[in-house]
Image (cartoon, rainbow, N blue to C red):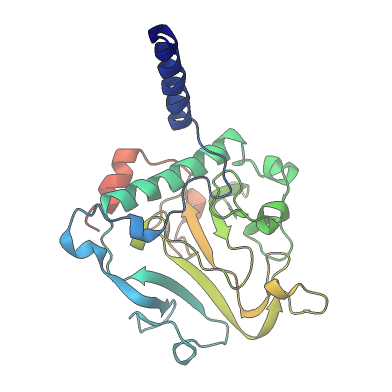
Amino acid sequence: MNLGQSLVLIVIITTAVNTLNLNETRTPENNLIQDENLSNTLNKSNLSQKYSERHIRELRSNDNTWKEENDSNINYTYRMYEVTRFNRTVASKDEINRAWKLYSRTFEFVKRNKLFEYENARNQGFKNKFSSTHYVNIGHYRDNSTLDPNRPEFLIYKNNSDNKRMLAGVMYMQNGVKKQGKQVGGPLTLWHYHTYPEKRCFYTGYAESKIENCPEKYISDVSPEMLHVWFIEKEGGVFETKMYVPDYKSLEPRKLSKSEFVEKYRDQ
């Protein structure tokens, strides 16, 4: 190979690398899910600490402490639990950046597909079977992707002051009751699940009492794990688990700038 051919080859390789860096890779997990162990460039020495086992805390409970995730700490009577692997609340720079990417790409998907208008969402496969707020896309739910901003499992709508459905956020949901949600944003991205006094079928994305002919991966007294991403102001932030919004009728969805997002979660 002569010098001219070598230079041409270098240009081709450089162009290909730059193209890969500029374009989002359409993997099932869209490059968002990474092993939390990769997050070792931490801005504080104590940020690397994690629980040896996952911990849970019950929402709507007077006891707000984190406990080990085991049967003795779980009440199977219509309860709701947040889950984490991190014994800290402060996120690293890497975790904040990954959380921002999840938030930003999710918002841009909604905006690009005009899903703020419910009619467009319905035409794109988001339907409501049981819930007054959660609209599932069954194709997104049953595929093998997780946390793909181009394929969220649920859209969350609430009626605004004009009694018109307003998109408040999205909900990601694991495809199956045994799968654990990856905390791509470290302690910022808390997944949650619901418990029931008897087994339910989650094949439709909702908790149905009839379990006959339900695929085994969707049967449990614990729901698949879920993660919210909000586009309206929430006291607990854009990933808050709680559904409650004090005055949602006067709110309008908007996207935080990256500087707003980083400022909100830095040293939280």
